[in-house]
Image 1 (cartoon, rainbow, N blue to C red):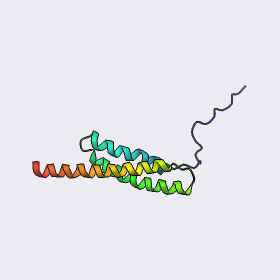
Image 2: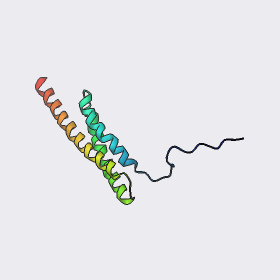
Image 3: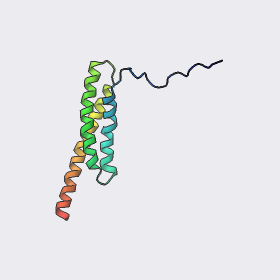
Image 4: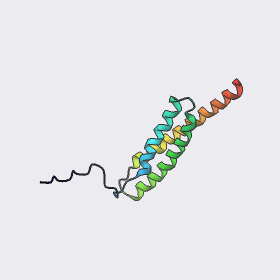
Length: 103
């Protein structure tokens, strides 16, 4: 006697989702962590922060179009992306200043 197929654990592939909001929520904090945890990580943190700001804005717009579309994740990603970009710009300026003065 055949067994029934197991139920699906993941959401349906065509279900509405807000991938930009979730991506921003990942990239924003990553930009802050990269700045502090790795030498020269600010070079990777700046694009991550800028990407989080762009994806967060797209995610907020998608959430307003569709009701209940991870608006909070998009806003958190946009905010932490902005903070990560500012922190990485400060780190880049300090690095260039140290390179120019320290030789």
